[in-house]
Image 1: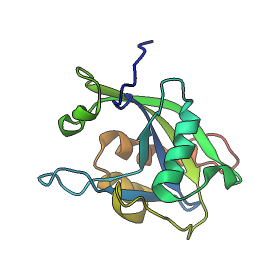
Image 2: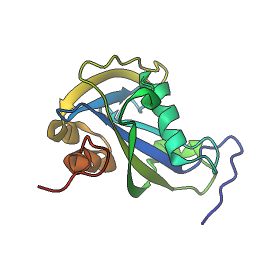
Image 3: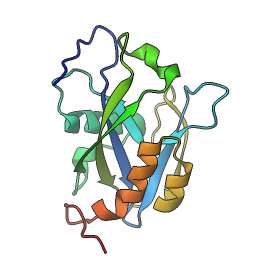
Length: 168
């Protein structure tokens, strides 16, 4: 396993947390820091580890709270670890946040089921707006291919009993 030193650079290990309701409406948040020539960038909660030894679940809890105001630890089901990872190329305009030569990120997937009508408090420096969309529509709106794929996988992982749902 490659070890990364964090000298003010982002660690190329992150989480994607798909927040959804029992009806499979997905929360998407609009990034505030996309380049002017890029279309609106809608995504799920994402964020990098603060240090290489930080467990992915800790990163996920922190990012959900920072970006939405939701305390995942207070919800009955809590975070569901999909035990899936994506490795993707970091967009060129965001590479300056990483150490020189880092071009790819490993993203660990989670979901979090919240009651319909859950209050959202955005971090204004990170996000401009939010919307709830049915899972298929959310997949069409996501800017990131890995986020769109996660939306399409949601029904398989949305079993409210706490584990991956059986495919129908």
